[in-house]
Amino acid sequence: MLVQSFKGNRSDSPRRGIMIAYYAVTAASAGLTFALVNHAGDALVGPMWRDIGIVSLGCLMTVCGLFLCRNWMGGFGALGVARACLGAVNITFCVSIVAGTMVSPFLGFVKGPQLLVSLFVAEPIFAVLWGLILFEVHQFLKRSQPEMGLANSANLSQGNVSDFTRKNLR
Image (cartoon, rainbow, N blue to C red; front, top):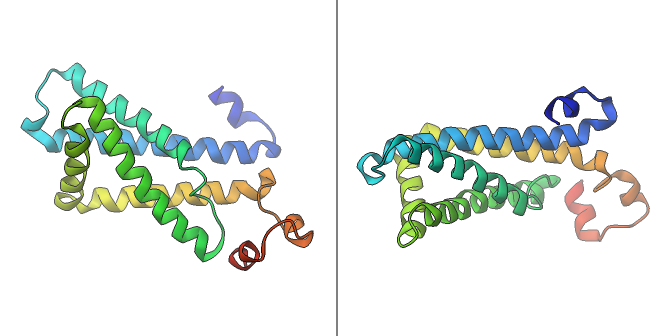
């Protein structure tokens, strides 16, 4: 499926952009979760297979979080950027709460965001890189929306959108 998605003609470009966004988030969340597990040190004591499971869980939860918050990303104009920023925060902290709860059911909903914030404070480069990845996801989804027919000039010219949306798309 991966090879077929990159082979097609240019009409497959919206699907390709969405897939690249999901792959970028998956790879970035694997790196971020691995850094989080290594940063936690004694907080997450266990064998190596547990670390692999935590990294896999972080990747899966991030992809699910992006899927659930995909409507926040990819908007046009200033409102689209503001929604993307809120969506990035929403994805980041909701995923840390859910993944933390799955790793440690009793205190994970507190420890997940706490470990994430402590990693971002101790190593700000991770926060910057994570923000840049989510901004690129926003750009990929923004580029794929007109090609998918979600927000295009035909809808604007026919009056199929509200005045509020029309102002924010310009």
